[in-house]
Image 1: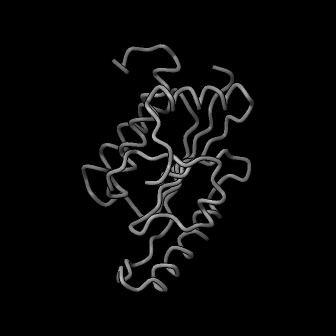
Image 2 (image 1 turned 135 degrees about the horizontal axis):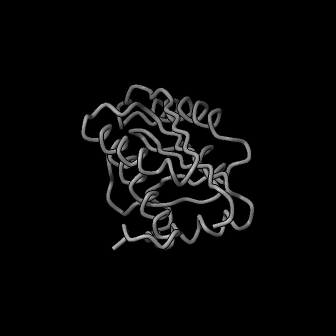
Length: 163
């Protein structure tokens, strides 16, 4: 693996559920020896009435402004999006390996809130990754993301966690 990866996770909202906070904290602890990890949470907007498209757009735009302000300017940005590509754990590991080898070792993952991600954030993204075609609560998505990052790094190093 060429150089150390610098990984940022920029997410809407705070981890409020104890199970999610404990799980993410455990994987953050496990990730520390492998990557330089930065976690950033931005304030979420109150969930608008789903039937009010204008209110949803306003909420998404406000969250997008906060997210975009927290993304490292030189990062390869991967947005978690339901319409993204489906990557296996091995494919994530391969992608991270290639980015590091190409000298693009600063990677930022973006996790939206209740309403998802605004089009401005999706346009800024270099890739879109879907954790599956199911809808996950954003707190659970953050837990799955940190676990998959840990798994990918173990794969990259040829270590046994993956089995």
